Amino acid sequence: MVVALILVVVAVGSIVFHLISPWWWTPIASNWGFIDTTIEITFWVTGVVYVAIILFVAYCIWRFKYREENRAEYEPENPKVEWWLTGLTTLGVIVMLAPGLWAWNDFITVPDDATEIEVIGQQWQWSYRLPGKGGVLGTSDTRNITDDNPLGINPNDPNGKDDILIQGDALHIPIGKPVKMLLRSIDVLHDFYVPQFRAKVDMVPGTVTYFWFTPTRTGTFDVLCAELCGVGHHVMRGNVVIDTQNDYEVWLSEQETFAQTMARAGGGKDTKVNLAAAKGGAPGARTISTR
Ligand SMILES: [Cu+2]
Image (tube, rainbow, N blue to C red):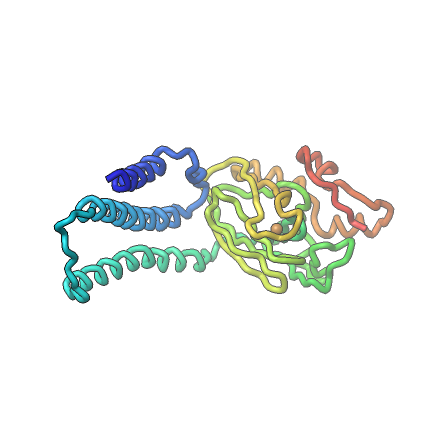
């Protein structure tokens, strides 16, 4: 009897904890509300099954407890119960998995007007590249990587000349416009993760992965690395700022282009530049060695 009561308390307590828990999702800041919906559907299905099974076990413990006169009945088959269990399990699995097909289809169908932004992960910092006025990113290749060109941008591609490089500083994105995040890694697996955006994909050395989203509210959001990438994994942090269009354009006009970076590097004297400080940038920004 005590065990049955404990099981009931566990089932009810789990639901109450789920409802009043302070550890819930961060408020969403992108178009991916449907991803939250699919997770909520999974919570509902698994929650109902979880409570039903625990309460059933509690009932059995109470109902069939030992009594001198009780006799067990041998019943190896029960087609009716088996059909019901198989049918309900199938239905539950379909309800959990089917919405994911729609979510995934949306996730890999990038809108035609999405702006491409490149994110580069390396142990243990984030760098970004935005298209300049031309609106097109220049090509890049790991073979172009040098001390002066740490992102491997093709110096002979005219599209790359006006690319904006952000190293050791926050990435800014304008609100309300779809962006396609092109994900590259220079060394090991990383994962660019902003919890409020919901979307994320692993960054794999040697290939370019992507996800897309549309920012839906302004603010400053933490960037985390969601892939254990070495001893400095926990410090691989950064910020993304979602700006109004005006604020974004002001910020963009203050950034250095690839051509300017190369010209400065070609000058050759400085061995260490704090790009963020040079731009009057954020406190705590990291110093990037360019030599
Ligand atoms: Cu990482």
